[in-house]
Amino acid sequence: MWQDRWVTIVLLLLLGLLQYRLWTGKNSIPDYLAREQEVHKQSLQNANLAQRNALLQADINDLKIGLEAIEERARNELGLIKEGETFYRILPADND
Image (cartoon, rainbow, N blue to C red; front, side):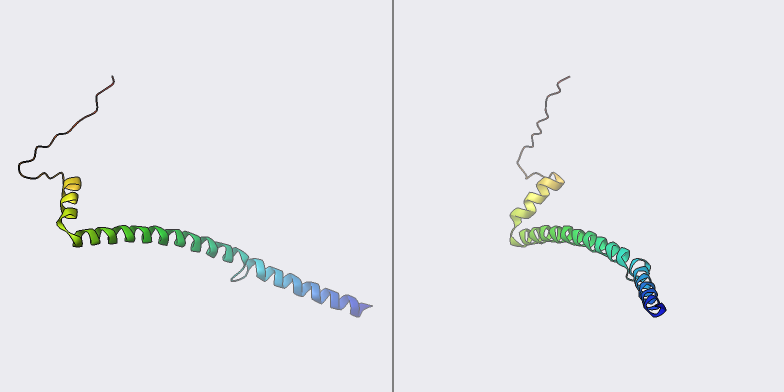
């Protein structure tokens, strides 16, 4: 009779130790969930960086192709105008 209980007690003790290690030990379930969140954040960051890299590559290709892209950037970013052109700025009317 004690042998049956002894085996049961040992098995329950072993199960308890394994559960303790599963929830609190190294590489436990909380560690796994934290790493999973880090991987998700890194994946989002990588996707954003890949999109930015694609836009930069498109700009580089445009600049390599011709002067039209350079002229467009100079007009948009620096506000440059060609010689002989007249620059007009139209402001919206105030509704006060």
